[in-house]
Length: 303
Image (cartoon, rainbow, N blue to C red; front, side, top):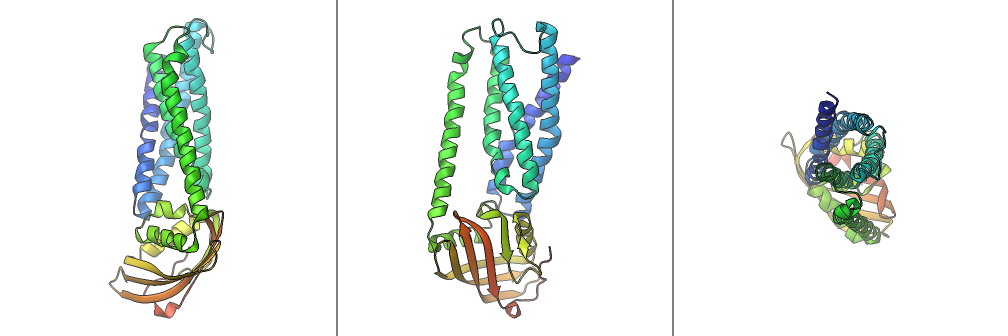
């Protein structure tokens, strides 16, 4: 019975864990805000219910089995090195899974920047899971374990280094963007409804002041909710920057918006401005100005 529970638990959390990169990819590809936020919640529930529960059960029953067959919770390294190394990786996976869980919890409360670190840990864990499964199936002889997994482990380390370099370059590129480049980038993402990437341009505690909103929009969760409710009122909307002024950390953008509301009303030639304040390339405040009288009949957003 103990072996059955161990195998069942492993299948539960391993199977779920290997699907998380798929969900992350889908979230980055999603072009609708409802889909993006829905996937965020799906990933959180999968992590809490299936992965953490299955992982805890797998580790507890696994250590019980080791104790049963080898007389100790820690596998003797000199006779079953493969099991000892597998336990080391399992311990890392266990600790990093709780770290991922923490990132997801605080991410749902507004620390989206921490939540975005999750895929890096997730992909690494998937790779280490594959190594643990290999060790359990092949059971390399003592003295050959590290050599047998060195290539796979090297690939995992190399991919993590590449990921760090890519993210650093993206951050540096964003930070070095001129006012015109950033305005084009921002409105390009907005018009393409690439909301996952658009929200990465905002600080977790960003302030957003828009006549559409009946109150200041404070924090990334409120910004997401604002865009969601505003988008629900428009069938189509495109905003084109006309003139860009000011330095890269305090940009004034003159724009023109055209679109159609959900009730079929036309919005043509609405003009306004965005004043975006940035720090290290990230938006921490946006002040939008336009005449509400120029809008078609719509409902202002209340959060």
